Image 1 (cartoon, rainbow, N blue to C red):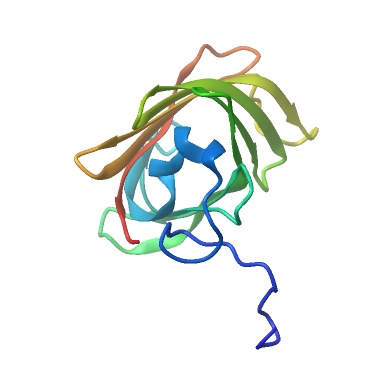
Image 2 (image 1 turned 180 degrees about the vertical axis):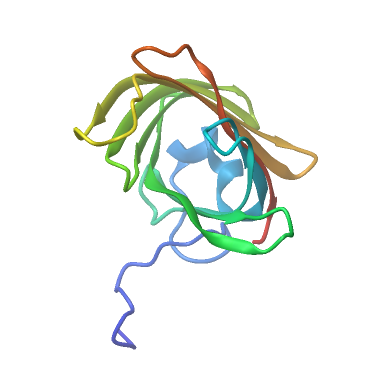
Length: 178
């Protein structure tokens, strides 16, 4: 190690540096990178809210992508109002088109999604398991759609609760940083 916080095994968001990319990642390889942009949190007591977001998909040579997302709320005046949704997890390709996604958030919700690569640049995932702590948001089911359109990563997340049907909760358009 060359510095106090560097690890001897590196993650990378670039296919040109770091460890060799596992062939198993082909179904999710277009996600690899860092992305940044804006989106909308739907509904809630305050109505729709704008947010900014940074997302990172990295690999270390094994057959999964590490996923990290951080967001911040944006006011009507365009100023940052504070932290927003934060989550981390792993995208795990299974076979040619099947994908698993494990996601955890500090709100106390852990989700396991299963889905498919619909095309080489789009993915549809549905929650298979949702576990939550007693004070976590009421989430019983979720669906995530991701796609790369004209170079931008776009996604939509719908969620349902015990007494609420599946409805849009979050969507964004992110541009590739690297």
